[in-house]
Image (tube, rainbow, N blue to C red; front, side, top):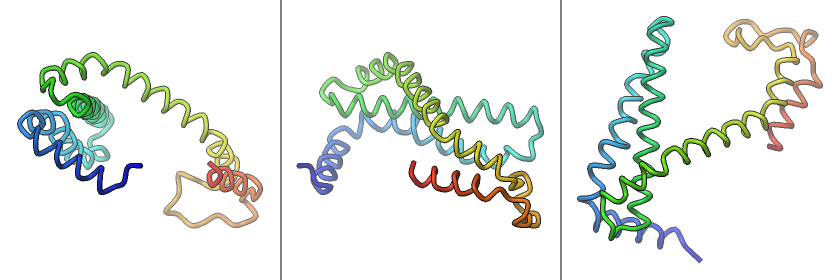
Length: 155
């Protein structure tokens, strides 16, 4: 059975032995995209419709690049003797399959949470006025809120 200390020891050993191969992949494929996403996120609100579309598109592209970096690191971890070039080729070859699986999982999660969203939309709680005054209890559909809450907890 694997323990956390064993996993940590193997991880540090892998990073120590493969630092030269890992550094370009991690810097360009993981660190830079995540840092840029963090800097672009505050621009989403005040940029206007066109600006939000451009910034959103950049964030999606950077997220895809970050996914590619994670695939390349995983490929290198699975076969460190093959080297960085083989890991990059494996990442390029598996990229679309991973994106496809991510999209399938996204659709499944959306379908799983759809009943809770429907219940909340039928509850009478104004979701677009979260900072405004709370509605009275007479306006709220209690069973719909209860269903959404319990469904989300069970999920």
